[in-house]
Amino acid sequence: DIVMTQTPLSSPVTLGQPASISCRSSQSLVHSDGNTYLSWLQQRPGQPPRLLIYKISNRVSGVPDRFSGSGAGTDFTLKITRVEAEDVGVYYCMQTTQFPRTFGRGTKVEIE
Amino acid sequence: EVQLVESGGGLVQPGGSLRLSCAASGFTLSSYWMHWVRQAPGKGLVWVSRSNADGSNSIYADSVKGRFTISRDNARNTVFLQMSSLRDEDTAVYYCTRSHYYDTSLLEYWGQGALVTVSS
Image 1 (cartoon, chains in turn cyan, brown):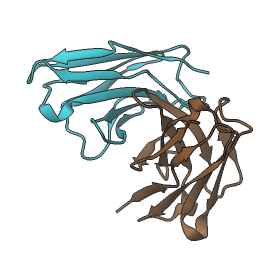
Image 2 (cartoon, rainbow over the protein chains, first blue to last red):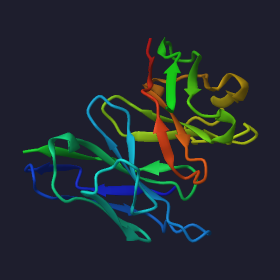
Image 3 (tube, one colour):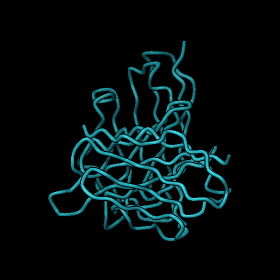
Image 4 (tube, each protein chain N blue to C red):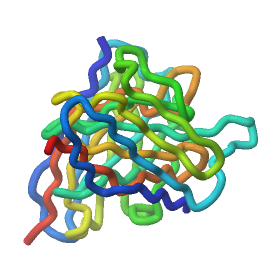
């Protein structure tokens, strides 16, 4: 199974300041079709997860452009340019290159 | 509007069985892969199982293989997760999720979840 390692596990951020989350996979996420199936999900308190970004850097419709994804191979990053109060929650990276699908442990973004 | 509504959760004793349902609306279920993902209290997300669009192929996490069965009734727009030989560690909120039509790698829509508690 592919192991997804996220850092940090907790990220206290000042409103309006940037936040960055790293995700590393134990093996390359490049699929035989050439795509890299790395997604980011947001889970606000008390809510189900919500897909934010797929295939490294593609934002889902309706996701604010302050969220961006980057990376390649085994190293990926989610960035929030200016954190807003509604961004509080836990962020998960997830690989869907192969089964079983696997998630990172999550990074808690909170306002300090 | 796409909606996924899970039901059937509850308290069950270790070794017992439970069947979760996921009622889908706002789309044609027979065109989409469906997954179950679970989350133990205060913990992270764990993928459990996937059913392809017509239900002919299913895949499971090793932790549930042989104990859980995913199935679907496309005519009734419902996906099921039959859980047997339940263990304490199966206690979790179980989410039903739908893949994207063209890109099945996306877990595009999520239900609100159903809580399963395994305890004596």
